[in-house]
Length: 131
Image (tube, rainbow, N blue to C red; front, side):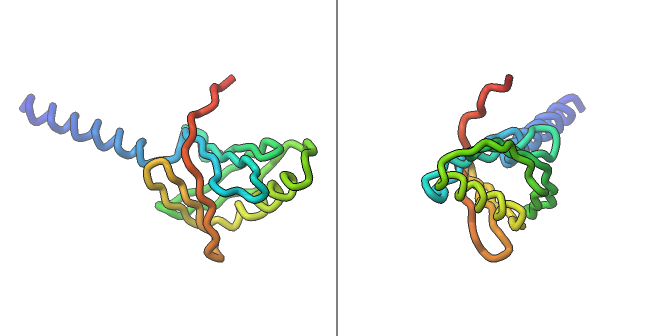
């Protein structure tokens, strides 16, 4: 009986660890090949369905997820000015984000897919230290 309980505990622990590893929650990403060579980041809160990131401005909002479908709510953002090319990249990105309807997570690569077939590809980065 003890061996059976130990085995069940080990399997439950393994499944819980695998589920966390196959999740973007609590992780931060940087977009590959962003427009105008912008540095676009995207992070996900570990406990709540909230996203955040930075282009020129910091942005943030909530998302809903079911399986591999995802819907980003409207993003709030700070209002700092920056170089015109980066502001344009930021504007395009923030207008595209609400059109995302699914994602694929493969290791450290997160691909967001829009309804019209566009893909936003991100790579996981080390999390910034929380203040």
